[in-house]
Length: 80
Image 1 (cartoon, rainbow, N blue to C red):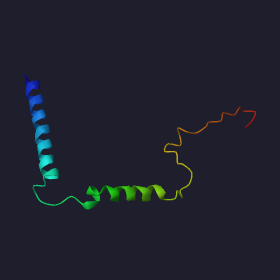
Image 2: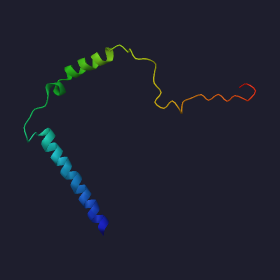
Image 3: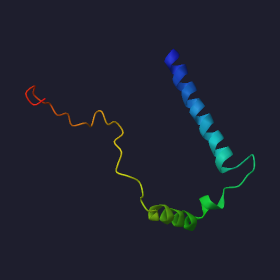
Image 4: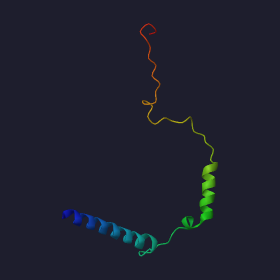
């Protein structure tokens, strides 16, 4: 019995959040405009070209977890 109320209230909360998002973000009920950089696809293409053309001046790739990537060399006692 309680599961029915939980499911219905969860779906209602999602519906309310979706409608609120549409009204605020798309319909702009509180005013405001969408920036031209978002609306203009040419601007986006030129920006993407700029980022792709940057020279790669960094060092070699960095291993995020070097401990798990180590090559362990096991030496016998006679070699040590």
